[in-house]
Amino acid sequence: MSRRTPAYRKLEGQHHPLAKRVRRMVRWGELADGGLVLLETARLIEDALASGVSISALLLRSNAKARFGDLLAKLPAETVLYEVASAVFKTFVTTETSQGILALAEQPSWREEDVFLSRSPSRLPALILVLAGLQDPGNLGAILRAAEGFGATGALLASGTVSPYNAKALRATAGAIFRLPILRGLSADEIVALLRRRRVQLFTTVVAGGLPPVRADFTAPLAVVFGSEAVGVLPEFRTVGERLTIPLAARAESLNVAAAAAVILYEIARQRRAVDSG
Image 1 (cartoon, rainbow, N blue to C red):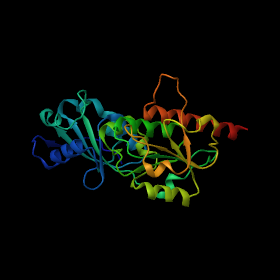
Image 2: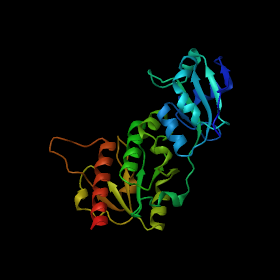
Image 3: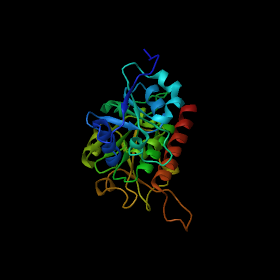
């Protein structure tokens, strides 16, 4: 049931408990107590609602309330609305061009089997991204967006990888965070054991010495490991599975990890479409 006439609670003090909670989320780029996610744009809030994610609170800057009538009409009646003084709202945001809207949403909840389940009409084999040690939230978000776009079934985030709920990562996912199953906080050994148990072939990306993606067979259930921007894949992944290297022009040393992920995901999707249409 949607609300008819918005009723706002006032949030005018810097020391309000909710203000402190939001600032902690912005500062640490992580979930709040209770597993709540901070959403900083109307688009992300719309994506969350469309994905069935519960929005517990919506915060609007005082001078921005009139812009979001259509979005307000989509909120369930139990969502608490806050009108936030402009001076307080400025302490919440991570960009200089804030839209004047924030939301606290439930963290998406996924089970192990969700990561391996194909949602395509043709039921293509599992395609898992393993992200191990990535530190740039923009790269992480871009990879998750590309993963959804090219038909990945899920992602496994190793311990030490930046949070996908970091504000920059969230924006870069373009809503994929609510639709792509993700398990996080796993050790490298746990990930390898899980993939073996699920009989998923493992590929590891390396800068040199690996098989070009066009020569690999990506038609079976598989997982691809992408390592940190600075040091590459973790040692635990280097000795397992097939190594992949994207051929580059002689003067190019390497690709940005998000660009490399997009190239390999495209080749996987191309091979699978060819098999599916053949």
